Image 1 (cartoon, helix red, strand yellow):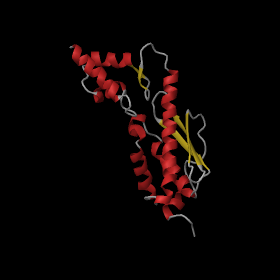
Image 2 (cartoon, one colour):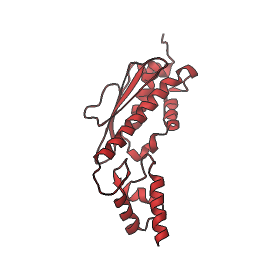
Image 3 (tube, helix red, strand yellow):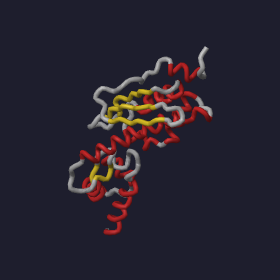
Image 4 (cartoon, one colour):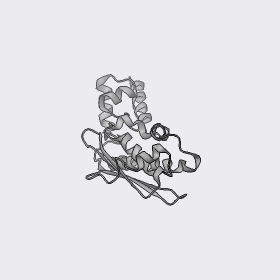
Length: 194
């Protein structure tokens, strides 16, 4: 007999994504101060295609944490960065609940810790994109490494009117969404000049 609910037990007895990604290019870690457990994600985002080709986790946590981490790693695998919609905590929590059911109040922190670690990994990815950028103009979209100059060019030559138009043409604004306001300002500035 298991100490865990059936869905949790089924995942934690044979997780599909436990381990470490060889040649991973981002890492995210978080720890629970309630139980002292940690979880880390190692992820590989393909530089050219911006697809998450691999995701794995390591944890010393309980079955709830193991199961939640496994579900989250599976959720991001083989997805284009734009499909992740900024990794909103509510969306990630919904993915965990869809696979494992709702965690009771005492176990909620297990899933929250995993969500935080996964989001930390993608924040690390955006930070690395900024560090690698060496253009003369500002880097606007860190998810896809798109500069202000590139966006301006596409706006001016493509008769683009919305942020979604820009995202469709050069992917800027199609990832985490943090640059969408800047792109809108660029669109507004050009519209004002015309």
